[in-house]
Image (cartoon, rainbow, N blue to C red; front, side, top):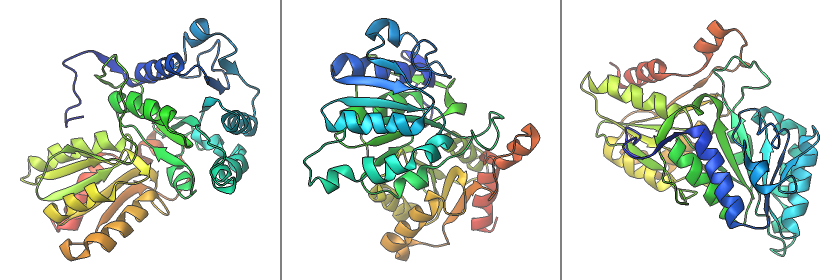
Length: 333
């Protein structure tokens, strides 16, 4: 996608792009099914499976008990025996309920079977704050997943990428977590009706620049683009990279940009301490240290649970203003 997400053609919101991607995958793959809490008649708490049970029936749109461990276990077993499940974990925070199945079964089974079992599992899960859903329904845990060899992790920032990454994940023969963002659901972009893939493992330069690189993840891409416009008015040309794929991470695109701008900032909504931004910083200094004219900065949430108070949550979540401030600090402006 370009800097201004295209809307000249057919524009649909992020939430409907998810629906369309899942529907087309189910039409393409006879052995695919959806399983999760409230995915059937309710169409999920966010509505992005709405109407699918009418088209595909309850044997392919499966309402499960309230058991994330059971959902992931079902998916692992089904995938190992020839199905291509699409699993729904309603909130990313609930991964704690099924981490043994994720970390010790899903991530490792193909390796432990010497490649004898493939695990084509797509997990859709919702991350992010800003909706006043408090500490147990607002977290971003992509760094935890990215630390597990055997799984892939992607974070679409717009409707076009949401559809393309879900389709790419469903066609992949490895477990892929598609980390969606609840505050992005109403955001529209141009989305083709035909099936297409956004490649896993490839970042995208969504704004060209020459003075500074901002690498952003998920909804923070929108904030980074807003910050870049503000900084442009002050004479600073910022390049913005949509990371898109957390694991595998596209080091090449990031390094190429840094060699041009010589300065960088990494932005994510997750807690700054221990966040994936630290991994990006480490890789950049390993691969392009001689090109750096300043330390690489990081913007993330403070080391605190997400507050329920709307006023406090607004302060907690990183935004364009914080990005602008950090860029200026790094440049001594």
